[in-house]
Image (cartoon, rainbow, N blue to C red; front, top):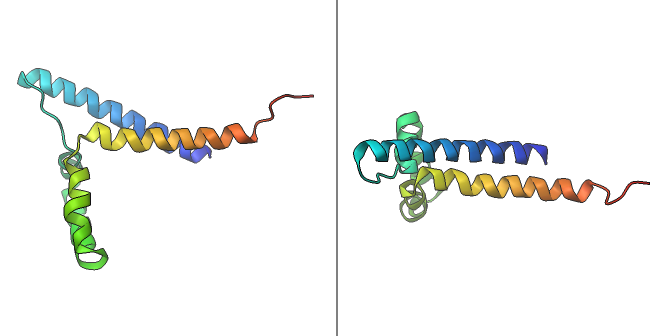
Length: 105
């Protein structure tokens, strides 16, 4: 459960960094310019993005890439990182709360 919380907080920190980067870029541009998750992934490692597309379309399911994954990749990066981060941090917290005794003797 600690691992879930650590990964969750890491994703939340990455989401906050993406939101800050997006706001600075928007201030410089003079208008709001959202950074898509796919654009961020392409900037970090374009080869892995192309490889994952090829693997999913060829070996998993071709229909899975276009409607589902492309929709996620077009969403803002802070949202794509923040929502799973919040869920994982909350799941890790729920498991830790169950193990704690309510009172001590």
